[in-house]
Structures are given as structure tokens and as C-alpha cells.
Length: 204
Image 1 (cartoon, rainbow, N blue to C red):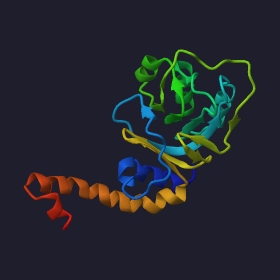
Image 2: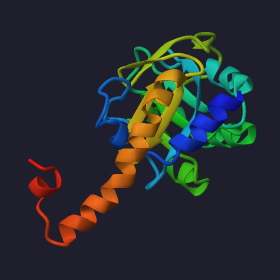
Image 3: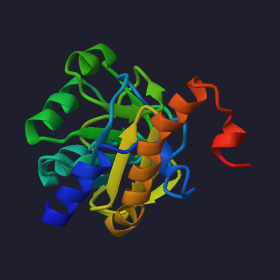
């Protein structure tokens, strides 16, 4: 990871996705994708993988391409039944230093994933899993996950409110305004508690 991205990611970890949602509308994945753990915030460069139907072949290849600090973004293409992520994949991801998984599909082994405190954003759970012995999918090509196009190296910010993926230069554009908004929010809440109305605070 280059120095620019490292600095950007460290700064973005102080920002909520919902704060960025005050300024932009694109890049936000479907609200169907929710984290299996509470109160998590993760940020990193995207390693992308596309998995068709019940084919999990490309997942180990994606892990081999990942670097510590990366976020794995998984497109499930035309499948809405099979879980491609579970206990073994979680252990393998932790081994290579992946910080989070964003999955436009389902997981299995929820208790094991939670026991490892590994953040996965997904659509839910399924006992029906992907199969070995196939040869499909792709790694580090553009994917569509949660309705958003994600390119390899895009910056992914995910927290309890949802998932945002944008190119690094666009994240950098919004970083300082987002930090300013976030710094102002506690001050506004305190003024409300002191009796001011929101209309007064906003000078409406």
C-alpha cells in the first residue's frame, strides 16, 4: 500500500459512512449488506473477486493476491442462495491480514466468524455452500457489489451504518469536509440539550 493510501485510510477511520452520506449519494452499497458484528468500522483498499453461482474457486486466489490491510470485496454475480464464506475462509483471511470482507451474498458458520471477531458485511446466512472442483470467477477485476462498481484498489469504508466504496482521489476530496461535519455534531447535540432549537442552530 502506498503512503498516500495509508494516510487516507487512517484518517477515514475517524469518519462515519453516514457523515459522508451528507455530501454524496453514489458509492453506497445496498442497505441489505449489514455487518455480523456490532460497532465495527473498517477501511482499506479493495481486493475484488467475482464468484458465479456455487463456484468458490477464485476465493483462495484472491487471498493470495491480498496484502495486510486490504478489504476483500466479493461479487456473487448470479447467485442468491449459496454461502461462500465461513470459518475456514475467515481463518485464511486473518492469516494474510485482510481487515474486512464485503460480500454481496451469504455466509455460514456465523458463531465461528463472531468468535474470531472478524467483520463481514453480508446479506445474511445460508447452510447451502459453494462447491470445490470448479474453475470460474475472477480476481482483481471490476466487480459490482451491493449495486456499486468497485475497482481493485478503490477505498472501502464500512461501519455500522453501511458500506461506501470510491476511488482514493474521491475519498480524499471529501475527507476534510466530512471530518468538519463530524466534529460539529457533538456541539450541535450539546446545544440542543441546553435548550436551543434546531431551527435556531441552523439559523433557519
